[in-house]
Length: 333
Image (cartoon, rainbow, N blue to C red; front, side, top):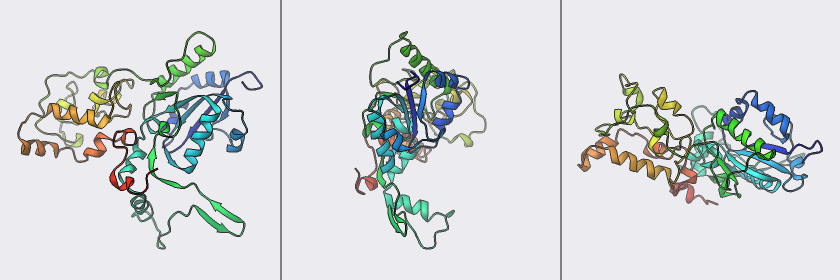
């Protein structure tokens, strides 16, 4: 507890886009409940906060920390370990922390390939081919920037995690529901779920939330959504040959994307009981192809231009694969 009797709250943004921070603010007036019931002691994107202040706090003095973003560099790892040490409840918040998400697709490449793309790309003016130098001597002393790791890791691959809240970002109504639960726990009106539970999400699949009609799927061709002249507003997108990740994706988002004619891309992570998201989705795709001829099957699958990116868009670092050979051979930690 703080001096004013309020439990302490923290939130940190590691290797991610910042959408999770916006999602928290999008809970609208519910954010006032956070302010009324917690003392916000560390939230760098919203307040002036110094690492040394967190380091000086007693261990376990922060009741709740929402940690969004994967572990891509030395600084991310330091803060993950520090906030685990200082927090009673550490939540992997959002897809980047729980699965790796879009930044995790870099695990298909090694550091040299990533630097080549970043520092030699068409939008970069770098005639001297400068690369990051983690330590650099200047007259005032040594400048240090966090070391870039060979592969991105999820939060639970670095520290012990109490709860997982998926989503890219988590839906604001789900965040509000979790905050309500925490407040009830503080008031002795509810109990926390078992450690390791997924919170702020459902226990089924996006397909079960989707209102589109489903029949026996017999796919003879996969198409990209912009190649379809007219999308049937009532029929399952997968039955229209559009790769939809709903069969493998956890429910909780309200099937918002399929509801407006856009395929589910899997941001709520693997459904309950799914060990490897990509493998589950590949199984679902294989089961709907209407052919037994290997050549014809290959031709149908050509309609999926980026299988790795489609099947592991959000989950590569937390999958059974974790990374591709180039990243592994680059000295994975």
